[in-house]
Image (cartoon, rainbow, N blue to C red; front, side, top):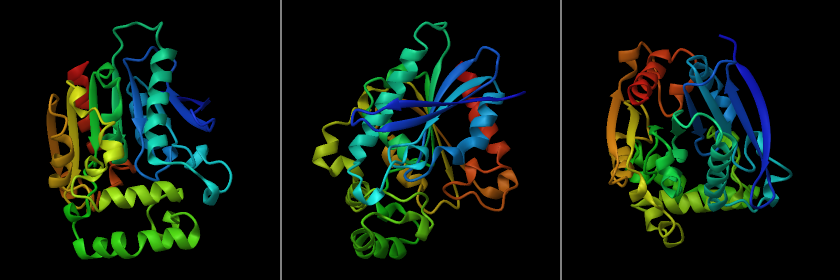
Length: 287
């Protein structure tokens, strides 16, 4: 089945250009998916998985947060982007999707699929219940004591993150294998969250904005045995805060799906079709 691609530009509240990618076939979709990215991961990384979803009849939207991937503009050292801006951008993109399809068949369901950070920020949306289902892939409370290799990440968060950010004027994620470079304000706030037991729930500025109790739909969470960050404990700690949702959880060892490793990002790499099928089968039970 041939997949069509469209690149769409919309403007954020801070007048920044946000780049959206649309994946679809020429036939009418059986559902509409908004997919949100992990911290510092550009949307094109997810193209194999989003192609798979589109080839199975879904219309899929992804986007890059401001100053990441296709949405990056100018010097990242001069960026004033914050994590609150990224929350706002998820709201802007989801509202744009709903408005764009407001004249479509009202029976077409919407789904929110996400990797890591995007599942954390879903709880800030006022429109959560417009989504018939939500899938969080390795999406967790990012507090460092939930990680494996605790000493390594203790050293990173307390003795490396801020000095490196100050030295470069931004956090050079590419140099340390963490994905795309991060704007300085994003890096500093992320450090604050990851060194707090309750993550952003301990951050007065952000905790008062979250609306986790709103969502009453079903949630599927996925974790993998070799993921150093999104451990089962970390994922449960986050998603237990969606107190009115109905959550299902799948934990997988790489060997069970004929893979050598999965980790935090391997779900989205080619060859992971058995994992992709798990999410598709779950969605199909909700349509």
